[in-house]
Image 1 (tube, rainbow, N blue to C red):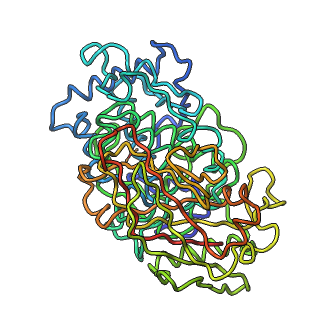
Image 2 (image 1 turned 45 degrees about the vertical axis):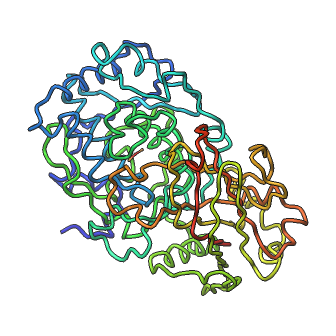
Length: 502
Ligand code: C2O
């Protein structure tokens, strides 16, 4: 029996010892996943993907690699808005890549990725022709009239903020509230989505529309795999910038059992700890460079690491921050540091012509709580733009809007927020897109509304002037935006806003 800790420390090296449950590419070769940008229509990987998808569509229902059956794996098992989101989708697209290697006759097939930050238009190879002539074609309402993904969804500023997430749960969504074991039932329990998931990930699903906009059906559209390949590439890039994945046993020791099949269609069980690094899984990205830090262990003496760790642990205990009027809650840490939290309940409904502001009372000025130079970058990490303090707003119990294409614009301390306020306003923080919703068939995951964490740090740093930091409250403002002009279809109401100051 392999000692778990020894396995974790050794990382990928001991993967081969795990035997049958972990198919390691027989040839030991690593395939190189390339950007679809600039690929010719008859690029060998694109041609292989067309052959494989055509064969999957033609397979009988009895074969688990049948196109619709394989898509149902996503419907039945995909975790969203929790910390299994990234590793689960890594395994799912890897299973798809292996099936393509098997069925296309190209054993070194590498799944292309769609880098939507560089390439805002929809990849032509997936839109060309029709259902009969092109296996990658799919009806997509958002694409027919020409897709142009906006900066506030996939632009460089959005992406660089995501890349500066201080820990895995800030980057790849948080653990399910109250999680206390690795029982399979936690796989789809809700945590909170963070920006990577709720903005570019959800946003691109919505912008494409059709099946892609619905969790239960999205992987019936072949572009799903290129979208998630890019999500996976960005995760890899975040690791390459020196960021470790979660060290928590509840993350690393979690197993996806009975979810996936391998290239031959046989069951493939895989643990999150085995999904840490692409190299061990037989693929790499064409833009990979620099060290890889998925298994990096950070020094315990780092105060921010201690705060993050303590705060995450609080979420495991589902500790509730006192509600409205209770003011600021100070949580002492053994080292002498402290985390602050405050919350406000909300009854107001935000609509496209009437934004709402939810004021969270702090009892004393924010600037005083944060201390001097708090929103300056950490001098020891000028390369990655880590802040010395973080201010997050958790929006809890969000009832998703009827029109799921709604983008919920989040501002902070804006003096005259109106539907005309521009996203270039310094008080703008982020935009939330919704994925799933009432028709998603996503089981228990969204009962009681969903949660998101919006990082306000960069906005407060930009607003770093007396009026915002001297006030003894912080106002989180919400403005839904939607091209559907029907009344009320873009209404959004979060039940509660929690403020966390790390
Ligand atoms: Cu589980 Cu982007 O989907």
